[in-house]
Image (cartoon, rainbow, N blue to C red; front, side, top):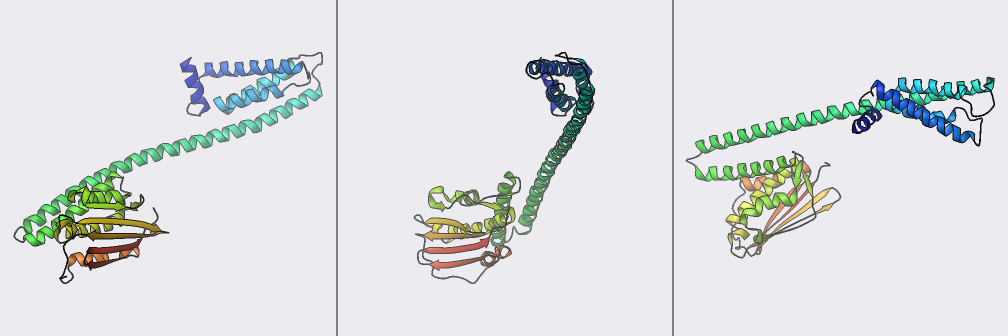
Length: 320
């Protein structure tokens, strides 16, 4: 029974053509059911000859295709002409109805066959898309693996060259690690980007979750914008660890963000940190903060208040 149901399902979905035995039995069953229905209708209207066979033709075409539908239409027409449930004999009017029945069946069979062809094409397209998606994922995983290897190689080469210049190496090392951490976070989401809160937790987590507070609705960032913001957050967090809120036992950080249409507004607010009295000349970090969001029609403003560093960021969030 399970095999018959599976064969019916595969035929109905157009996956495979039913076997000859199943097709013959199915058509015979449909014609028998239609003939029984015709007998019941004949108790009220004896002049109904072909209408009950329409469902049989439709089901046969839907399950077995055009050939099975045509065979059912021919057999149903023959039964409508030869089998009588009244004393009326077959006349020219019945043959005219037979031609009309076959014409309508032909249109129905064509429609069903056309639909089956479209469904088969869509199924084939879906199959190819699934295969291409699997292949794309494989390529992305391979590229991510190679990128990680190249990053590790660059990291090792720079460390070897700059091992006698610890200050320069320390600055480069931190930024490379920040980029690598952000790439890993984006890669876990199939390269499409990441949520801003996940990024901030990844960057600020090492300083202790009780040292910062995040306020804002869930916001998914496209990959390029996520990388730029990750560099900014890393720069600000590094400075907070050296000179700002995270360098003090009581220091706290609050990061808030909101959306206004397609504009993102982020506020980085440090409190209870040491008072910053002297601000040195702009270095690489300051230039990075000022330029990282220009590609997104954005800007970054940093103010050194008595309560701590106050930074505002504004930029356009590209459509996903």
